[in-house]
Length: 357
Ligand code: V47
Ligand code: SF4
Image 1: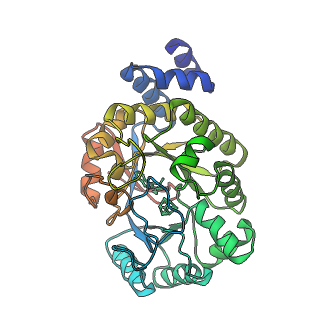
Image 2: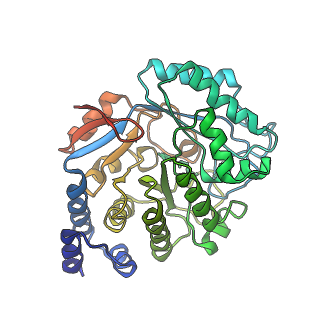
C-alpha cells in the first residue's frame, strides 16, 4: 500500500478514499508522516508560515448548544456569559495593530438578539480605525444565521459584509459533516451539506476561506475520510480554500459522552493523512492552541506548513481545557519553527510573504 501511495505522490496523482482510510488505520506513523512530508516538500519546500494576529470572540451567547462546546452560554445572565461592546472590540483591534498584527480573527456565538447591523458596524469601525488590518471573520454557520435573520441569501449577506470590511473567512463550524455523528455533537447546527453550500457561495462571492475538521470525539476514521472527500470536491470546484485545519477536540466542560481528547499519535496521523489526501489544498495548518506546542512543532515533520499565529486571547479551546499558552510572540513562533529545521516565514492572511527569518 505504501509503495502505491508513494508512487502517486511522486507522480502528482491523488490518493483514493480507500487509501486514505488505510493510512488512518495504519499504526506505522513514521511512514505515513514521511509520505506527508514528501507531499508537503513538493509544494512548500522548507517554508513554514505563521502570522501576527489577534482573536476576538465578540460574544459567547449562542442559540445552538453544541455538546462539544464549552465556550457558549445560553443567556447573557448565565455565569460567564458576555457580549463585547463595540468600543471594547475597537480597543482590542487597536492594541493588535499597535503590536504589529496584520489580521483580526473574529468569530462568536449565534446571538439571539443582536441585529445584523451590529456586525456591519464592527467591521466598518475596525476598518475605519485600522485600514491596513485584514479582517478574517465569521464562519459559514454565522453567514447562514445572518441570512435567516435578514431574509437574504448567503450571497447577499456576504456582499454586505464585504462592503463593510470583511476580507476573508476562517474555517470553523465544519465539525464533522457525516450526519449521524453531527446529530450527536451539534444537533442544532446547520447540516454538513449546508456548510458546504454556504461556503461555495462565499467562494463565488470572491472571498477566500479556510476549512476545519473537529476530530477525536465520536467520529470514526471513515467519517474523517468522508469529511476530507467533501472538502476536496468543493475545492476542486471553487479553489477558494487556503488552509485545512484539523482541530483536536478538547473534552473539559463539554457534554460529549465518554469524551477523552486526542493523543499526540492520532493528532500527527490526522495532520499527515490530511496533507496526503488533500492534494488541492496548499496549506495544512497546525493550530497550536488545540494541539499543544510540542505536538504542533513535531507536526512540521509530518506534512504541516503553517503554524497559525500569535492569537493573543483564545477562549474556545481554553474553556474546554486546552493547556497551551494564551498567546505566543513572533520570536517564539520563529524559534519553534527554526528548531524544527524549517524556514520561518511571516505571512499575511492571503499568504503573501511579509518577512523570511
Ligand atoms: O468551529 C469548539 C472548534 C472552532 C471545541 O480558519 C473546538 O484560520 C476543540 O475554527 N475542542 C473555532 N475545538 C476555531 C476555528 C479556527 C481556529 C484557528 C484558526 C482557524 C482558521 C479557525 O473551534 C469551532 C469548533 O470546531 N471547537 N469547541 C473543543 N471543545
Ligand atoms: Fe455556538 Fe459555535 Fe459553540 Fe456551537 S460551537 S454552541 S455554534 S459557539
